[in-house]
Length: 82
Image 1 (spheres, rainbow, N blue to C red):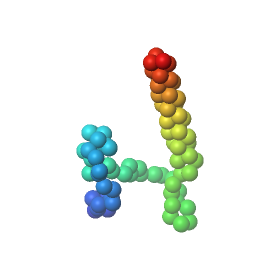
Image 2: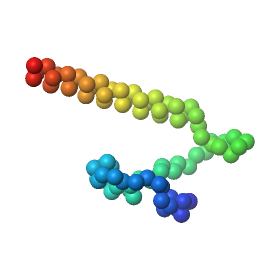
Image 3: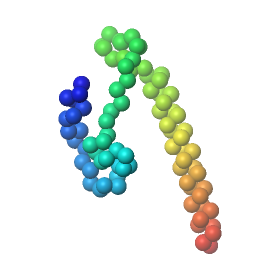
């Protein structure tokens, strides 16, 4: 597993500000490996689709909230300059 994580991901850093500093560029990006007690399907896949979809919905809600707040803030700034 460790050998697979150390291989080149194919991602290319084109600008140092594209990744947060704590990630130290592309080299700091690592997949999240989680031990699962879920029973694998016949094909060996043990991804819990309900959990993945729930996490996706939570991320979508957080993103949309952030965008709505940013849009509101920009609208206030534009109105101040009129």
